[in-house]
Image (tube, rainbow, N blue to C red; front, side, top):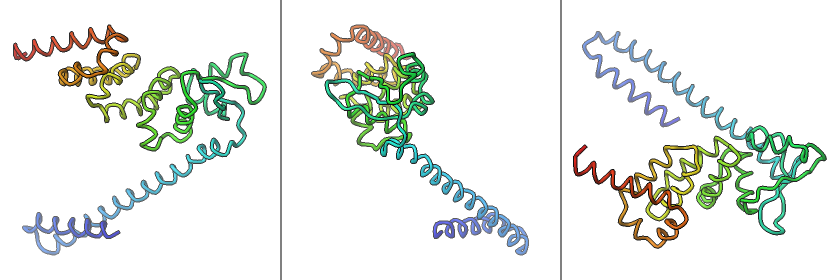
Length: 245
């Protein structure tokens, strides 16, 4: 509220300074009207913030349903040997992913309750992070940083649009010389063309540091087509700088 008073005071003072050629009564009236408008805008902002807070609290109920295993009806099995499954909810999975919907609509999963589906590319910890995101729409920063690559792959494979965007933003925000090749490899299978183009441009600008890194040789052997794309992009960049185009 102190901030609101300061804003209101500043607004009134600004109105006075910009309208000092008008009669004083007119200035006061206009300043008062503007102050009322400002207060109305501030109240609307406060109401929107309150609604946002209530919305977050409301949506946390889904996360509670996962955490407390309330009326779960499907078991999600991670890859790896003897890793425990995680109880989940068919309806939520089917709503968020057309791939999950198709899997759950198949003859093998129509019945009975607590049937299982397996996500072999995810460890138990990665699966836990995926489900937490699906139920809450976010992840703690440390979890996102740790699992962003595996989540990005899962988001593409299971067609989860919001998670795709979330992972792309996280990778772009953390792009550096040590992870650029990993991000380029993931972006090669991504539907987000901007992610690949931005990463490729970053690699070209930091060729010396990246190409002579210990991870580049293994990357080149595993991804010859991407190595070719890096070389071509680098040559194109050199030509542009030489010709000034």
